[in-house]
Image 1 (cartoon, one colour):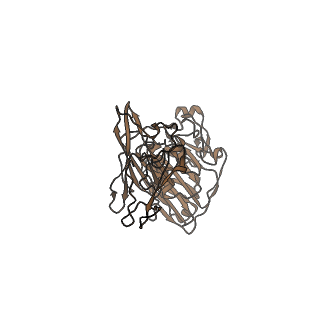
Image 2 (cartoon, one colour):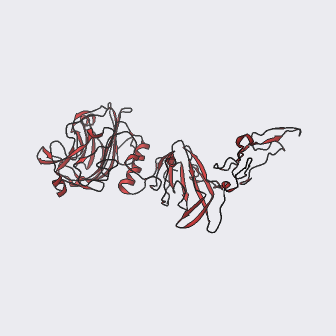
Length: 456
């Protein structure tokens, strides 16, 4: 299933809270918009170039404070500073930002001109522990920098930093141990965009990569005898404390987790980032269901989904799209076969409007529709119910709003007498003179209990 590509139609859909339950990952913004709250939870810092003044606030082109959306809150907000020469910095003014002298906001990030930085008002202590993750997105090139190093993030030059190395055309992940060993986990350039840096004391590794799978050797991988925590006074984005390595380029986001993200978590954050910052889809880290529908009416629009535990995918019985009426006649279900690398034989589920998918499944649901123009459509609720005490329906054999079952041993009474008048299947005994409760619809010798059709 991994690596499959699908051409999936976009669909507009209004969702209730219950419709979102059970969905862990999705690839279609028509199901749920991709926003800053969709990332893996637990970020301590989250400087987001789109939501730069708050998670629920519109983007600001005049912001002098970049709000931290992570769990540490306003304590780690950062403020725009201008370089006034050498290692001297001062607060940038609104007029200077408006003029673009010391950088300017783009729709999804801040554009550095090489003479500014973002820094907390007072030095903040960073205590990463021995497991942590940095993720960032920039639009930069080592060719645009003349100094030996340019700062993306810097807490202490020799202890914790993400620097563009212009001599090697790399971004280096610098830690206490890597500086001492003069050996860095790096990403090759000269152009740089997406990056994830992870330090993990479980296996004493530092990894730095631009994709969604952490390297286990080679470029971007470094193993040490120890991975230490860091506690430094102060940090900056875009300009070093000495003023000698100003960053030029667009800085779009920076996230810091005090844990080592898994490959699955890295991949999901990438899905969200691809939608938010590039307006394109990325493969889900896990796929349980692919929904296909020629009519934009299913509750979960056409797309790919991963479920959390289980989820029931549904479609309405009747839908009106662009003034045209359609009737859902059921769906086909195909199961992915890893051996053949293809979908299995479609199974038709006529008249069924729901399909439960578990997180261990990998299925494709294709909703079937017919033109309903001029046709009257009826359901079990359209009968005269006043005074109806006993009602056994061959289509809704398990309940008014429950999918038809082909394995049911109990035929539910839909009438007002309820479950006290449910029917239970019995099988004639071998002697032909008594009855016993059937345990399945399988034949016992020559005694066949029968079988459900789609309507009786």
